[in-house]
Image (cartoon, rainbow, N blue to C red; front, side, top):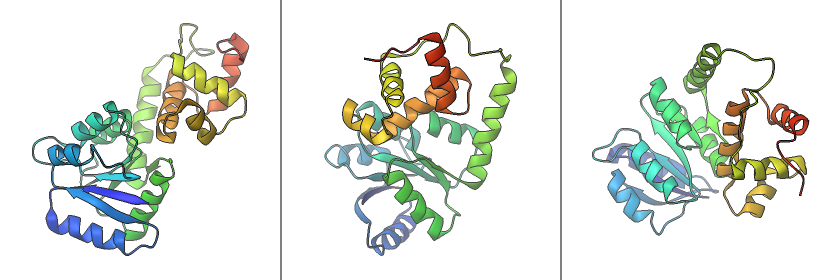
Length: 218
């Protein structure tokens, strides 16, 4: 799998490159010291994983990643940061990142995160996971619970397509191929659907959709 590094600390970046290139199944194919250079270089490069620092001179990691995703860049983004502030973690997830781990993590976990993200999975661990859970629970407590999902819930056309294909028993990989979008994008839509329905699994959302005829089989 191919990896691209974006970090303004040369010594740290070189250490990551040496670690990654020592693995048989992964290779660093490019690197940048800031967001501006990353956007320019990644215009023609499409690595499996982009490892992105949060705080950098000029355009920060969040802004750089947002620009890449708006341009429909198909690489999966893994944030690798010193900072575990809730706002950073939530912003990374909201803008479509596939993972967020801290720079004091072990080499084993770091490499495992790269492999998971490259395969279209999310990777949030330790303190980062705790932050996400807390924000989720805080948001849930702030919302008045209803006996069932609100009737005014509306689905986007893409969400309807994805739910319809899930209802047909399609996997994330099948759906991605059918709609010509990345697995990461499919998972982001699934998470948005869970938020809309305030449920913990896609099966609960599907059950409600079937009962209310929100999606129709083609």
